[in-house]
Image (cartoon, rainbow, N blue to C red; front, side, top):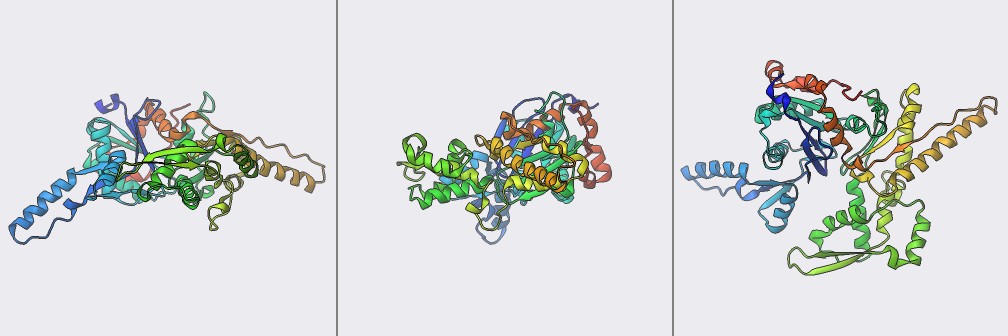
Length: 428
């Protein structure tokens, strides 16, 4: 085995909102940064002067543009303080849309954050379910050509979330992964480590929508948040104060009875002037996450609650897997971290399943009793980066290196080898 295999693999989970990166074998990622790139526009569009100097100017501008960019929190800070930086979000709805920005992003991840030599480490990258195979080819091309890495494995995010194996000591590779990220929500059934592709459900409500809804509620109530800061404030309010309630009406009454107990204060400073401001955080604390259970309060385009989508997903899977799928519903992604989210999901899903069992008993006229169906939603403190942790677990196994595509194979067969990545079970 080559020298790179004796070093820990690099695990990078690129999400729409945040990227988690670190080394295999660790329990937590070393860095969690927003997936955003800030590029200095003054270099990208140099003034068009004539003659020789033009070529020189363009050349040096090109070199500078390659060097002068930031990612993550630094990128957001630069774009706030200076007008010369343009923000680019390379991933939208779980899919890479801007490959140039993505390459720059990876460059900073490897050299500035992880500070490792990519030629010395195998890499495990993740992708959203339903990603086109061409996307894997582009990823392979960038990784092998630009960064010259020795080996690459591209894993599907929900499979890694299951591989995080935090239900039992023996990892259960059959289950439904409910992955609610910042830019995409997928419900993905997995049987023995294989994704049941035809049953994947994706819904258009995700973490970013919760942020936008919180922002809208605060704006409608007339809270004075500076316009350029309102999205960031809504995001922080969501992350710090939002929770899932069991009944909206009761929750409204609680807030109205004891406002001092439930209303929180948000304090900030205006980015331009530095003047302090504060605003109240009220009903949006429980209304934000409620859009997963009553989507009609947010949008009239999509009105199916998340528990019903999970039920549909399992009902469309092969009949012999359904009981096992109901029994192991695994949450993954930052937007499942709201307090009591898993309890509410389990309760609502159990209602749907029990109603079906009662209906089938009635249909059979009581001659045959249907067996009750166990519904279990698994929650765990690690679910925010379950995908990354699953990658860390998998990339620590000896089988991982055998499953990787190597630089030599890439040079011999080309980028098309990256289209398929074998399922391996290093966890058993």
